[in-house]
Amino acid sequence: MELFYRANTEAGLDRAQIRAALVESLAGRAPKKALLLPPDYTRYHSNAGYITNTYYHLLTDMGCEVDVLPALGTHVPVTEAEAADMFGDIPFEKFIPHNWRTDVVHLGEVPASFLTEITEGLWNDPVSVEINRRVMDPSYDLILSVGQVVPHEVIGMANHAKNLFVGVGGSDMINKSHMVGAVYGMERMMGRDFTPVRRVFDYALEHFLAGRPIVFALTVTTAPGGNIHTHGLFIGDTRKVLEEAIALAQQKNIDFVEKGIKKCVVYLDPKEFRTTWLGNKSVYRTRMAIADGGELIVLAPGVERFGEDPQIDKLIRKYGYCGRLKVLELFNDPKNQDLRDNMGAAAHLIHGSSDGRFQITYAVKNITREEIEGVHFGWADYDEMVKRYNPEQLTYGYNTLPDGEEIYFIPNPALGLWIDRSRFED
Picture 1 (cartoon, rainbow, N blue to C red):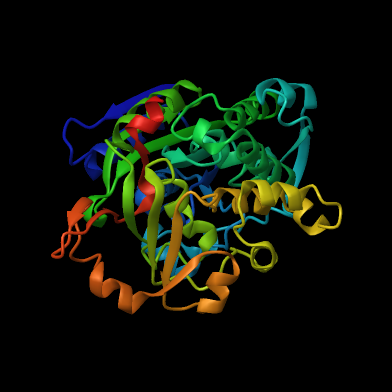
Picture 2 (picture 1 turned 120 degrees about the horizontal axis):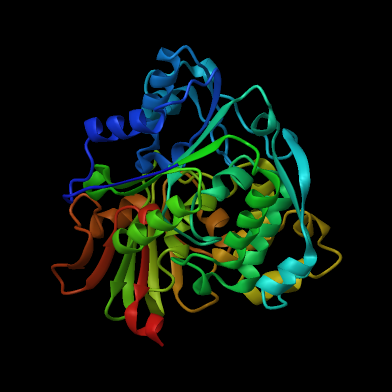
């Protein structure tokens, strides 16, 4: 089953059109028990909230029992307030928190020989395939995986099987997939399909979940001014829905700049970004656009810690964003078993550094200068910085300030990928 819906205008599909598409996707089905797998609050602008709410009501109106398992990955569980804001009137007791360390079952492994082949010999270990036990529960006769296809630093383009094997997956897959991406090189993958990490997820989906009743509902969105525009909705149980969504996302979510950006200012909405684990999307998504010797200023009024959980937070504070080669040196040192046991954190440290190519300054309100500088970022006071770079007065893209300084402003780094065309073509 494949259903493709593309908007005819830049405003995107309206709610009536989206609802009609969801109704069509359920035609001929009579599930008794369904599991919805939407993204968490950090993907607020995916429009998955409305889609999940609509599916919930369509299914319950059919007499179907429905559970909601947000694809948290390593993130903190959705709060009741966040659930209400993103998913509307779905009862909060229907939301099941995913625990990536304990709430999973083992399905098999992606063999070492396959990893060696797809990474050009850069990674030679197998990857264990684990998933939340509810995905394998035979009482669910429909599993709807809802999410957004958008450029991503670990896999190239987010969603589809990633929503399963990372979003509700286990520690080995999360850790090793992140590390494979970091070792292979995110600049080789971002914005592309068929990356090594994507091929790991494809392998796992084909070999271990082929018998499960999984249907994907994938969006392609932008959010100018914070208003969600749904440019496409792709529903089905094949890889084709991913490929169609990727083709549209490459048009809508990749912005080429004609020359390297000297100063990039990125705003992190405090509702979405409370950690550098998430806030470093400002680094990942702009690193291919910022010029050597340039500066990235991250306006981060909500950032108050580094990791999404205490264990990861502790590791980031201990090792810091010290650059790819230094992280790999630390990772390969037998004394640093804590880092080896948390490959996802090691990969994140690699992703979050500019490797000395440009300066990264976090402008913050809720975390100290000592803490920020302790992880190798520059620090600035948010209230002082916004006197010059006020996100309410800046417009997306190039801005020229009264004194002639040119900056490039990005209001939400999670919604795109920015690339220096000359560097990309080289």
